[in-house]
Image (cartoon, rainbow, N blue to C red):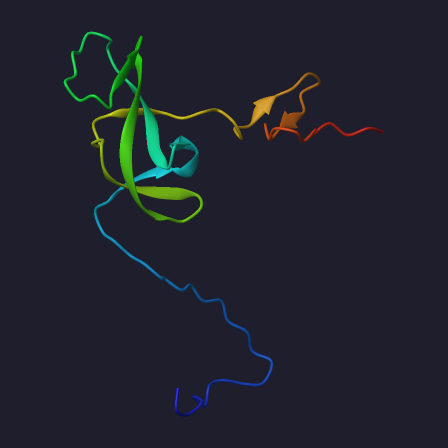
Length: 120
């Protein structure tokens, strides 16, 4: 601003949110759902196993198909899907990072390579 508002005082703090990009009505998936392969992005789609898709990008594997998608804005946690699937598709996501119970009732974060048990 060209001048400081009179309500501001020395030592005051503020929390702000900066939006670099914003889109409305987009399809978002958790970033964990995206599989990167040969500079392309894919997702696992659940199917009934009875469909005959003519799209060569859909590789039938029982009831799961690896399907190519075009991605857009990536926040690091969620990623925009520009094309390749619809909101009616069921996307399967790896359970890496999900919380699970461990022996003794402790909670484990499921992060590969990191032990969550404490030694006393």
